[in-house]
Amino acid sequence: MRNVNWCSNAAAIFTCEKQPATGLRGMVVTNHPLASAAGAEMLASGGNAIDATIAALFTLTVVEAMMVGVLGGGIAHIRLANGTHYVLDGMCTAPLATGPTIYTPDPNAAPESMGTIGRRNAVGPTSVAVPGALLSWCEALRRFGTLSLADVTEPAIRHASRGFRVTPLLQECVSEAAADLARDAEIAKLYLPGGMPIQAGTRLVTGDYAETLRSIGRKGPDILYGGELGRHYAEHMAQANGFLRIEDLAGYCTVDREPLRGLYRGYEILGPPPPSFGLLHIIQMLNILEGYKIGVLGFATPDTLHLLAEVMKIAFADRSAAFADSAFVQEPIGKLLSKDYAAERRARISMDRALSWGAGEAPSEGAHTTHLTVADGFGNVVASTQTIRSSFGARYIVPETGMIPNNYMLAFDPRPGCASSVAPGKRVTSSISPVMVLRDGRLRYAIGLPGGLQIFPSVAQALSNLIDHGMGVQQAVEAPRLWTRGRKVKVEASFPEGALAALRDRGHNVAAINSVGGGMNAIQFDADGTMTGAACWRADGMPIGLGGGLARPGAFFRSDQKRPVYDRTGGVASS
Image (cartoon, rainbow, N blue to C red; front, side, top):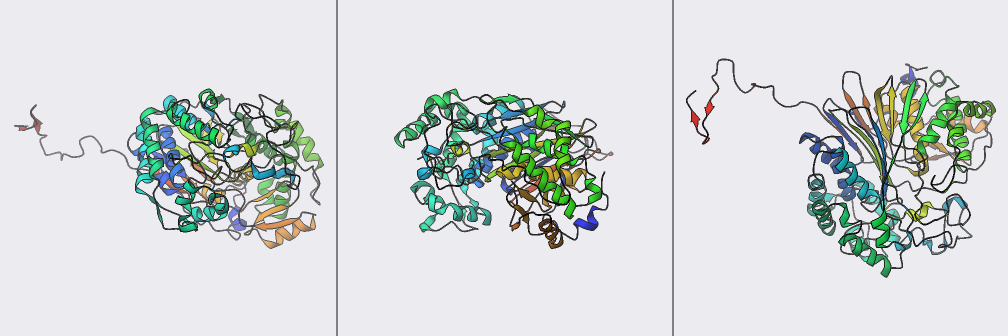
């Protein structure tokens, strides 16, 4: 049931900090203005949403290098103009030289931290998994795009070679990672000039990376997956005692996956299947919430917040049974998606008190990721989440390339005998949730965000904001969020204190934090063809919409004019 009076409650709680953009001919929403501009440039030049997506991603590897890179991994959810959905899995895999005993777990680390002695799975060459990002981007462009690889890498090359202005967010990320970055001369030279974090407003030039992008644009992904760039990378890894070898790069493959589908109050929700578990748990949570009149209960009321906290705890309690690469572990997907199972779980919820649903000992995930949402005027739409896992990944640069490797080995359990233990060739699992929502077969929303384990609860809340509370897309992505795995209910500061006090009275351990999840962005599609793009305050995101179009035929000539006739030499003949 839609609560059309949501604003009477929500407007008193939060005010949107950004403005949406609208357009009829295309929309690009990324977490950096220059990346959004790169995508819009592709659309304006006649390219489609896939062209724009790949151009924006390459640009993000320059201006948001702490979040995403060609040596990372991710998932693209693509909807073509004919209504066909593709999920292209370019997530990282464990190198062939790895195994369940390559790390020594740190006995003093919290279980969910996946900490190891010497942090060997978190920092440096021993933390690097086989990258899938570059190959998956190039495959998407080859299969569904219209422009060349040289075309879509050009904006990124321009910003790398000429430089771009550092944002306060980038400065914050550098400060947070400074101790690790200082251990590598190449990355410290860029981000710790004079031994101090680079300051916001500074122009940052990454010339080595510009040359790497030029080589990729000329020679394609094979330059990394078996070619000279890959050999250089593998040689460096061998010298630095890393696990990755040229055989890993040459043998890497992306995976086409059928999208997972669920229904919530008549809306069809589509997104990646396992080993990306985000949508599975979104559907699970919404299935339970479907038994309540959330719109009537209201936004950010004690009852609604209580229910959100309880369904999150249920999802995390079940997650431990389903958290692994499906090629290695059998998961109970059908059960978790079942409406009957949701009813069983719902029947146990008490509206009067918080319950214990189990700790859900799933591995932790990096919150430092990026997401973009892109649509063109032809009907193609892309929602894609990409990452190098932690901020600045493995926190060093491959010499002479400007490339920052991922640290995705941190996604595996360093303890042998667990569902997510390290195994050669095993694909990492994630909470990545690039989601699209249909109503009566027509696309209504495309949405996603970075944020590790906070991704799928944040998307679930945004979908409830849209469907239950009738919010517009800007309000839905900026609305305050809560998150819990069962120990503490972490809430953003703008929730009313009275509602939080009521949660405490029901037994929730409530703690205020600055933000839950990362920079969510989304596109809303209206029946008249209007697209509304929105980005939230939690990142540097910006929507850019394309309106207008080409001139009407004959618009240059007045009705009383005779059109000139041109001869073959270019001169004007008599008319």
